[in-house]
Image 1 (cartoon, rainbow, N blue to C red):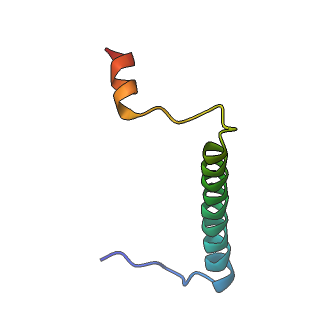
Image 2 (image 1 turned 180 degrees about the vertical axis):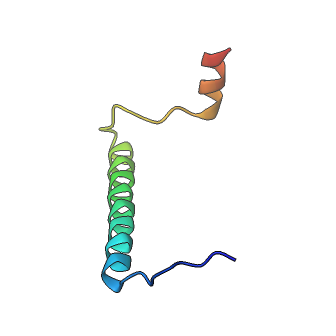
Length: 58
């Protein structure tokens, strides 16, 4: 059975987790911003629905 040769340091682990959390935070902020703009009617872009994508491919 394969095992790691050395233990990963806490700083490397924490750095990876911080990067992952930061990416998630950025995506959440973008989604919230898009949702707010759609609600206020100021948005010029809306993600296409699955039905529209199917019609374009055919």
